[in-house]
Image (cartoon, one colour):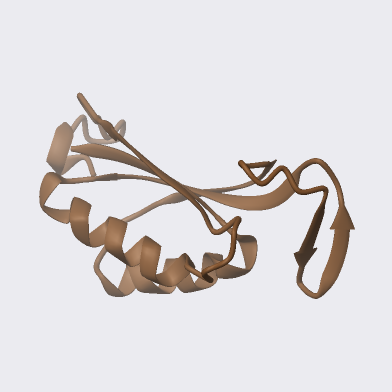
Length: 112
């Protein structure tokens, strides 16, 4: 199992969601976040408006996936979130040691 965290542009979130759901991803957590990357630009265009800020709005998507799903999930996120411009985001992958569903006490693959 793996824990995948993707930081994407907020306006790409619905495309990423639709692609992941159509690929059969069972669940995810989404958080509105702010940050900056290597470009450290003070000006960002978001939904047609120009913002001057040190922090740019982003969406953080987190999910647990099986080893069999990992490459497909990563490819789906990249395809759906890419604009080709700086600031498209990042994906981080960690090895997940254990997952437990609280309600049923199922573990690992059964829990996700």
